Image (tube, rainbow, N blue to C red; front, side, top):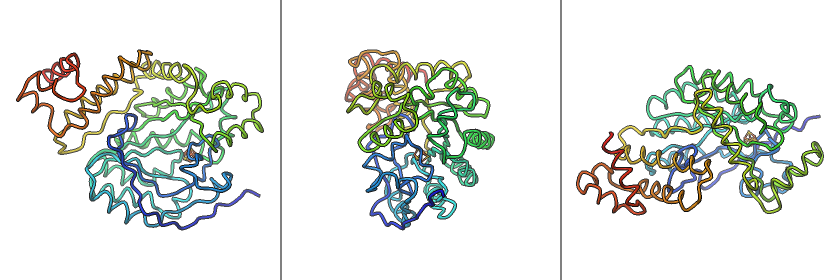
Length: 372
Ligand code: SF4
């Protein structure tokens, strides 16, 4: 008989994880989640890492769900004091039907004017389309679907075995179409790309093509990561179900390696980029504009620099060429003033006086300012 989930009430002391700067994938600076454990139980899930999964027995991860009952109170308190920036939130596993905490969190984001980024494997997120539309009108809502394989892929059945408790990708694509029709930015997170299971060209192209067919505008690609107890768990799964893949994973993820070794990720991301170009999509997400934000131009420039960093990494440019762009992006992110004001008052010298902005980059930024 299939094991049933047990729900345990839990009262954390804090709910909002804050970073100094937004991340450069989703543009979120905050994250907040209502549950610990996930009933979808994907075998590759990084949430089985020790820091996210406080279980004595890791097999309990999809079956013992901690429900953070005081989430609404904590989130309201934390966001009331925080500068407005996007929040990575939502969790639409089956527990959400019973407890509705993701919905309550969206209500608070809407009320306080915070943009949101939701990443889902379940079409249950459609239940909150009304709220997400309202957030989109006030700030910005992005709804992405985790889709790593489609029925067009030769290995689809094996991938489905690894995410067998999650709704099938066809349902996620249908949901994507509805969000797109509602005017909400949507697309696919091809995460994690599993070597030997979903990194073949047929699958990568099918994911991108279906995303385009269902109104998605982006496909973000990233590798599987393996760490501590999650690594042990995943290798045990491979040994028992797909022993033919063990050698490939042992060489791609040698002992102690969190990311795939060598050039694996870059080569895959380049192919995803090429398919995105072919189907008119992007492999990046546009940074949300926050209404009334005095630093919108700064943030747009940070976005350009960060996208340049991504392209340089894909092109395998040496680190000493990439780092100046990354550091300049951080410095402009940290500016209190509108960069246009600095340029108006001090010209090129003003741009060069910004920490970590070189003479060459200052000239590039001057060109951007002149083109505004
Ligand atoms: S749906 Fe996402 S959070 Fe849940 S188990 Fe799968 S990968 Fe992990």
